[in-house]
Image (cartoon, rainbow, N blue to C red; front, side, top):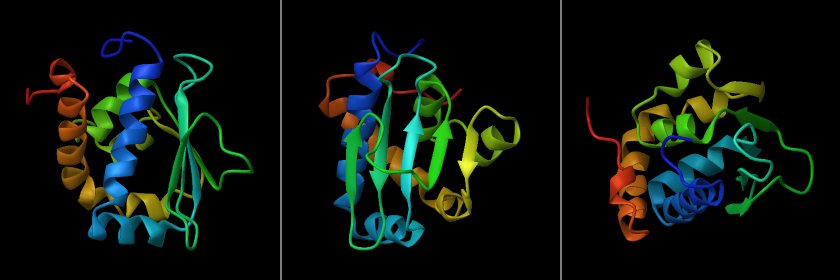
Amino acid sequence: MKYWKDHDEPIKAFVRLMEESFKDAELSASLQSVNQLIWFDYTQDAPDCSFWVNVRPGKLEVGKGKPDGTPDLIMSTSADNAHLSWSNKLSPIMAITRKIIIVKGSATGLLKLAPKLSKVAKIYEQVLKELGWEDKIVQQS
């Protein structure tokens, strides 16, 4: 992994990103419209390198590891590619097309959120700063 010292770091950052995104009224409403249990599977980096988000009706939950129950959508990639995607430096649509991100299930609802990725990236950058990981912030190339 280029950006992370171990598999716990990215999951800590991504879970915190989701928790902070839930606090934003616009993002939480948009996430609820996805109506899925999503597993972000980055286990190619380490067996426990994954997290889940439950945005089914009445839910806004996030947790480490694989979810209890069957996910509606599985997004698989490396923790580094996920970092680039959450940083808005890797287009999820392009990454799916090029099989950098592998999708199992329907990603249609999630892809509708792509226009909100710049807002998510700002929250992600703030999370990295709060965690003391300014060195992980991906600068414009």
